[in-house]
Image (cartoon, rainbow, N blue to C red; front, side):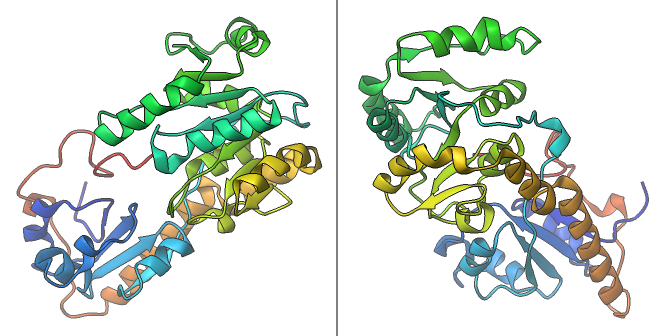
Length: 324
């Protein structure tokens, strides 16, 4: 495999530190979580010292997140990207279809707000997402149950050419308005994005980057989202969906979805959030770092054997699960 010139991290792999600073080696860390005091305050010695090390280079996943990490050395923004061709696309909005919201079931994701939108507009609402084993999330899910008309486990249904007719259509034709599906597979969620009238993103916190936004738009499905976190730099208000400050604004925007061209949604993702664009920006960053540090007398390359503890299986590229 050869020697290492740059290490790219997606989490705090503390045990790797002993091997990477002697000789000094450039590190790129993609920041997947919001800034918080416990991460960057000066008395959090090891991490703070590392974050101020000139060999550290940080990547924020949005301009919003970059601002939250104000003060870090060597930080730039590279948005997440997806493979556009993997997402099914529709030419026209599906008039009279359902509203869709997907994400971990927790108060900051705003599933209760999505239910209010559906109740006020009369649209059917499909809710998808896992409920984690956390007291606050379990308690929130319990509070939603009285508003959910049907609980369905569709996890066992494989996506094939008959998936819409066999799985989706019976649910869409039934007289239940608010339907909870549980956690969906990657292929399942593509189908539910595709046939939706709109995807609701009623978040209640400053999310650094919502993959839901670009996944939905890649399918040609507009997004209705609250103006929180990175939403305004991902969704083009009035062109790929609507960005609003209030629940009433989201309710009113439902009837304006037919003014959004699905092709504009897909084009926006292709132009700004493709996996090709993301990879190119990372490649350019690596090269800039190498060009800078190879002129330094202190720059060294790290033999693979210097890493004293092997990376855990499945965590070579990243540590933790950041998809929310």
